Image 1 (tube, rainbow, N blue to C red):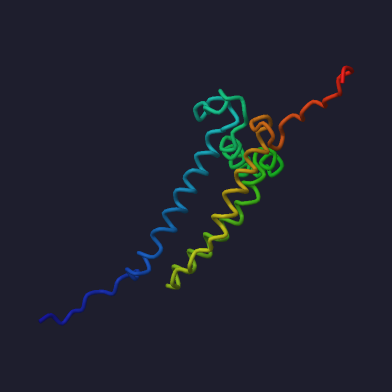
Image 2 (cartoon, rainbow, N blue to C red; image 1 turned 90 degrees about the horizontal axis):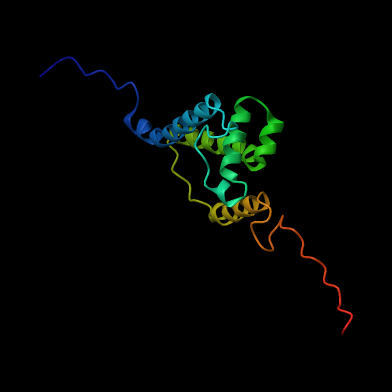
Length: 155
């Protein structure tokens, strides 16, 4: 029998396990943000070529890359011009992530997910993407108006 006790763990293993997922997600987001700050997506071909450019409409993902780059340079007007949805959503996402990290730190149980985010978020993103790409939908927002039909003189 030993009289020396093992030292207490520096970090509670349960807390570390709870924090692993949100901290990993934050690290991936931070790494992507740093990469977008270093390599400018405004330069043609800097991140490869978008296949939607061949189809002739603006890609919301390319605009998102440019918006994040502009945000890292603290150019809010250019970021809003590139993708307003990212500019509005970024602080909300950071707030939700911070709240989740704090809850994991305190050991609070995970709350049930609200179905509204999935039902509301996806359609609003699709509407945003289609409104930013004029002419892609035959009768969608941003498409050219149909010509007025005039009655023929014969009847």
